[in-house]
Amino acid sequence: MKEQEWKKEEGGTQGRHDEKSGMRNEITRRTFLRSSLIAGAAAGAAVNGLLPFIQTIEVAFGADSFSFAWISDSHLYPKTLNTRFVEKTERAINEVKAMKPAPDFLIYGGDLAQLGDPVELDLGAELLKSITVKKYYIPGEHDWYLDMGDKWMKLFGKPNWTFDHKGVRIIGLDTISRGPDYWSAKKMSQQERMGHMATLDGSVAGPWAGVGRDQLDWMSKTLSDWPKDKPVIVFSHNPLYEYYPPWNFWVRDWREVQAILKPYSKVTNVHGHTHQVLYNEIGSMRSIGMLATSWNWPYPPEGVPVLTTPMVRVDPGDHFDGVGWSKLAMTAADKVNNEYMMWRKDVFAQTQVDSGTGDNTNQILSPRFADRP
Amino acid sequence: MKRTLLYLAVPALCLALFILLSATPGMAHKAKHAPEQLKAFDDVFMEQVRIGDLLFHGDAATEKKMKTKLSRTGMACAMCHPFAVDNHPHEFPKFQEQINKFSTLRDMINWCIEKPNEGEKLDPDSDAMKALEAYIYWSNRGSKLDPGRH
Image 1: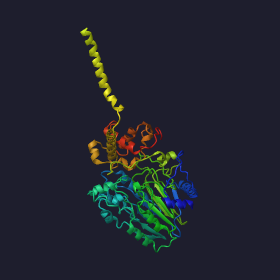
Image 2: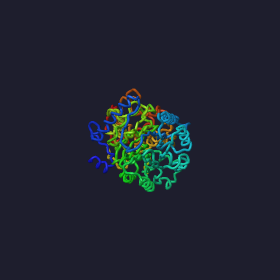
Image 3: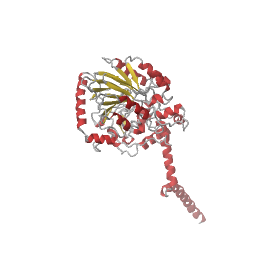
Image 4: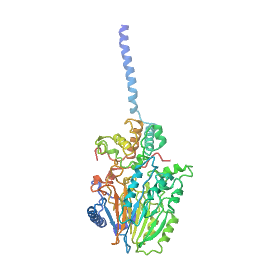
């Protein structure tokens, strides 16, 4: 209960470390239980010859079993410039196609393109065409800010949507299109606008990630006829809590989002954008960060949720390392499993020296200098 | 007598001139620093930080000006190192696993340019390298020196 109150006040995002060892010093009953679940799942995965760890979380209540897949953050350039991102997207697509039984649907979680170029978006649409199960798309900021979503919407339709599937209400949110206008006053070209948006650690585009009042009202209305004890899954590009605002690892109106979701006891948010293994809980909402197929982002210097079991340090010499996709399943036992399909043997760090957050204890960083006014 | 005086005067004058000339540059740090002077020093440094920041973020105009080709994949340094995170300049020199030798930060910068970015490595003493180094160090200032740490 104390932990719940602390998370409510702080957004549940504050990592705490022991200064000497660099290890997390908050071991709660919940994290202990979760670790036990993870250990059990790992043994099963090893027996079955599966590559990744399985993170088991309880989200379903009275739902039928089904599986689905998630791919996101492919950041495709035109093939003439960069083929490695195409190769990795193709690998994820082929693995989704090989799933037996086939997933009920695929979520593409945004940032299909790197610079919103129609060539990049067409390339992505063409690659994804070979997946024949039902596909749902939400946009990322890289898809949008060249032409403000014109091309993306022509290819993929509305950026937010909802449907019910086997006892679960599923919502796709657009967390990227409501950024403040940073371009008009400066008379930026479309390419300049996109360039600033595509710079994760830039300051010019500001706190662009948000759900917006109109979409909050839509979400509230969408959920109004849904029983409070039945499962809800919300897909979004950005995490729906405050993780690390300087990189827009949040939505700026996350408190309003939480207020709408609070009455529902079984909510799972699955999000992209952060390109890393990530897990958090805020109230009754569980939040799982997905891998990118393109490249891995290091954990920021602060704010990593204490409930996250950090991923390993990746090898920058191997561009297939630290990336992948996710296989998710709602089981008959009313649980949803998330299986990180990372293309390496060990996904989670076992020791500090191999942890992707291990260096946060001695790393003081400054926001960049050259884009300051 | 006159000739003796001349013999003495000429070396004395030469010595005085030598002391005067050699002492002048060395005297600079003994004078009080004026605020404008300190600002000038800082401006020199921050200009290198600015150039390094632009190179680090793949700014095409700066690359052209500095005659560099830091990437051929569309990737810029900052795409894996936003805010210069995980650069760890304070841990160099150290044994660098990827390079398989005892390495400096400049060695590592060149490895990243050549391998993941598929660009052209820099002369370790070039202006572009110094600017990148300035940006990375500035971004990580405050981190404790910890050379050799893996």
